[in-house]
Image 1 (cartoon, rainbow over the protein chains, first blue to last red):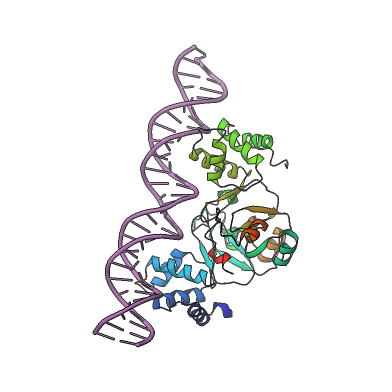
Image 2 (image 1 turned 45 degrees about the vertical axis):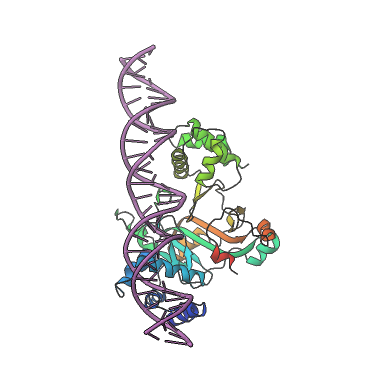
Length: 160
Length: 160
DNA sequence: TATTAATCAATAATGATTATAAATCAATAA
DNA sequence: TTATTGATTTATAATCATTATTGATTAATA
């Protein structure tokens, strides 16, 4: 419900970046602005097709790519499915390796970009801060072997 | 040069995990213990083949997978090439989006696992803390358009 | 309407990773 | 020494998300 997530603002920003607001793009934007989740390209495709049946997967990828280039969206690259997030404010992602859910956690980043530039000489342009583990729901369900979409194979996480 | 990185220790741990120490695995372990870098599977393959010419790429993937499962190695999943690191102590990775180099930065993680368990109910099993940007070398070279192995397309990082 | 460029969508291509299956090796027992 | 057994290696094929390609369609403008 942040300003950055509002569909209207995203539409305006997309136009400002020099892209047309086609019906397909508007539908994708509306979904992205409304969802609080971190969907994959396939999930965006499946969801938006319910309101816009003709949509093709290629258009989804194309639009997501445009949004990323325009700075309206951020990609979280994973081995299986990349995920996209609209929350561009600094935060940490809590990623459940069992159900794939990603939860935002507002928290300060460990080191400031200024410090890294001054002390290490590294120019920060972006970041990625993630904890992997079990969300509250999956901790409860862990005894009943019940599968779900996984963010990755997860064996290295679930073993201990 | 840490104990965890020593080839001898890794060999022992691999055996302790119930795996045989084959010549192929020993060669891969020796390379991993010696390198301070964060190689991809392909890089491991290319490097180790210089001392062990018969090595196959499948064996590299297999061995890396075994090492990850045994807790001797950590994967950093990327869209293009996954990278592997032997430094298992908590740290932050500084990833150059231009040359792909990954530099370790010892720093405290932003929030403790205890805090997350108590306050958010999230059970931490692993983490991933990364800053993306330009390493000192690439900041100098940024004017001369000079390509190198990239960690990803990088357009979204290099634009600003 | 004509022109032009942007966009769309179906398909093919890419490429890292994984699965498969046959060959090889190591360890032990007979 | 020779089988036997099971793990391992290797070459190859398969997988699959993502990207590139290409021809068709659309929108904007004159």
